[in-house]
Amino acid sequence: MPILNDTSLDQINLPHSHYGYSATRLEELGATEYTIVTIVCDVSGSTGAFIFDMEAAIARIVQASKLSPRADNLLLRLVAFDDTLNELHGFKLLENCNLADYGGILQSGGSTALYDATENAVSSTTSYGQKLSAGDFSANAIFFVLTDGMDNASKLSAKNVKEALSKAVSSEALESIVSILIGVNVQDVQVGVYLQRFHQEAGFTQYIELDKADAKTLARLAEFVSQSISAHSQALGSGTKSQSLVF
View 1 (cartoon, rainbow, N blue to C red):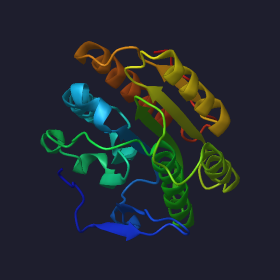
View 2 (cartoon, rainbow, N blue to C red):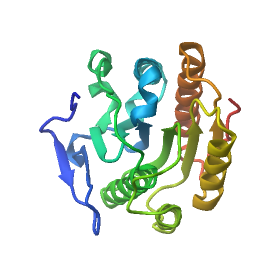
View 3 (tube, rainbow, N blue to C red):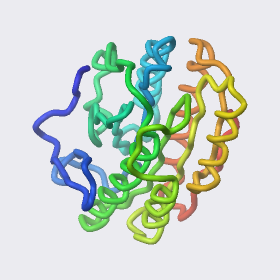
View 4 (spheres, rainbow, N blue to C red):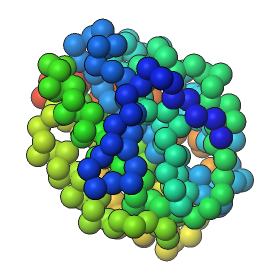
């Protein structure tokens, strides 16, 4: 599995966590405000049938975001998880995200540590937001968690995710935070109920459920994600979250 980080990114530990994150150094940032974007992608064994279509969707998101009028104000982090978490790249300036690097980036296998991956996404966003705030940058954040099933491997719980989200808000480092849980290829009613409950218990902003994971559906998802990123970035400075888009 390719690792797209480079030596220009700082490696940052998170307190009381096995996983940390990496991020662009503040001195490398040329704008005064940024939207922090995180995409968390389930690559457990059950995603094998549509793993290449998920890769294509990620590339579409990056490509569309590069065409956004706010492209210079976006920082993107990409994480994959099965029973462990793999940071494929940390918070990188979008201009440093090369489309060619996203081919073959996902490999499926293992079980599903959904809670651990989500908590890391929230905590790393909060931590980097605090660093940006301390450096006199304005920032907001949006993150997307894509999964096709129920957690069966995490050390943490939905309660820990909720606590991390509450901490993100109370830190006041980020002007606003949008969190979107996306159920992909949800054909089992029990899985749908489980993810809807996780959405409510953890406090996600929005839950989207897709009953398919074919190329057409995931292309639509890529469009939704890129439009959501653009809308949230344009809301930076308004003091409010962007309006939730309808998939």
